[in-house]
Structures are given as structure tokens and as C-alpha cells.
Length: 267
Image 1: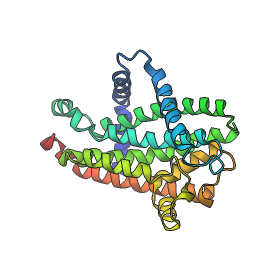
Image 2 (image 1 turned 90 degrees about the horizontal axis):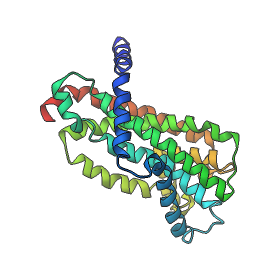
Image 3 (image 1 turned 30 degrees about the horizontal axis):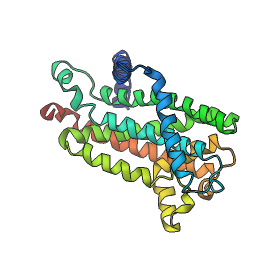
Image 4 (image 1 turned 90 degrees about the vertical axis):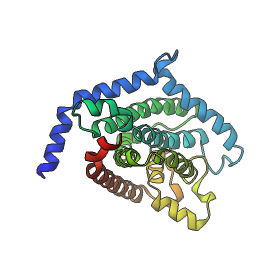
């Protein structure tokens, strides 16, 4: 308990540094960009439009009502995890010069990458609202529960980001392997097809063993009232999402704390 309190106190002590790192990441991302932060809204809109045109012909609209909202809802949740972890994976190696000069809690660099991802995710939420408005999506009070799903995804992504950042210090191939993993992960998460399109045996595995399916489906239940993914109600989805988030955070923290003292020898 004392160690946990010390970690929390350290986190609070360096909150200003973390804020500067988040600000730096956002400024670097949109530096020399004519559209600036507006691109965070236009980019997902552009990708959604292309994918909606392609996949709406592959899957009948009767099976997926309001396909653009279905697609965009999945993108918001999955892209947050995908882009944030890919940014976090090099957070320690990329901060080698600073870590060698002064003492800074190493987790600060990884956490700042995930927080930057949260801000981008909120911008993407704006793009989703635009899609809902132009496609006749149903706005309801359930949308106000969006933070509850984002928190689950954030905790899961943070744990995964810490794990990847730590292991990538010792095994630089992790970043390349992870690119292949996320590609397979994307197609195993019903982003642009209904889960019913999968074989029954694979449906169970995806719905119960794929955490991103839980977060994507929970979010779709908020943006598409009446949506019941694969016959699974909101309760089991939340249970799977919360358990997956806590488990991944525990694994990520354990690996990071166990190995962080050796980072300086490899970066």
C-alpha cells in the first residue's frame, strides 16, 4: 500500500511535466499542418467515407442499419487503442537523451502518449457526431455514457502501452511484430462486418476473448440504440471490458516496474 501511495504521489508531482509532454506531442503532430486540429475530425471522416462506400456493397444495409455510424463507432474505439499503443511503444527509446541526463519517472513518457491519444479520440468523437447528424442517427442520453466506455479502453490501452514500451527497450523487433498483430486484430474485430458473418465457433472466441470487441460493441450500444451485438447484452460486455482492462493494466505495470531499472543499460 505504501508503494502504491508513493507512486500516486510521484505521478502528482510530475503532472506538469506530463502536461508539457502531451502538449508537445499534439504540437508536433499538427506542426506545419494547414488544417491543424481540424484534421483530427476530417481524417476519420475521410477514411469512414471510403470504407463505407466499399463495404456497404459487401454487406447489405439490411443487416447493418446505418452502416456509416456502425463503422465510425468501431473506428473511434479501435483507432484510439491502435494509434495510442503504437505511439507508446517507442516512448522510452525515444526519450533516451532526457532519461540519461536527469531523473524523471519513466512511466511519464508512456502515460503522456496514451493521454495524447485520448485527446485525439475526443476529436474523432466530433467526427462521429457529424456522421450521425447527416445519416439520421438517433441522438439519445446514452451518448453521455461515452466516458464510461472510454475509461475502460483507456485503462486497457495504458496497460498494453506500458507492456509494449518496456519490452521494446530490450527487443526492438516488438514494434514490427506489433504492426502485424494489430492488422490481424483489426480484422478479427467486427469493424465493418457483423459478427454474425463469422462461423459460430469463431463468434464466441471473438466476443469473449477479444477486449476490443467489448469496447467497440459497448460504444455502438450508445450510438445505435437497440443495437444488440451478437445477442450479447450490455452487462456481459461491460464485465468483459472491465476485467480485461484491469488484467491488462496489472500485467503492464508489473512488467514495466520489474524492468524499468534496466532501461538505462539498453536505451
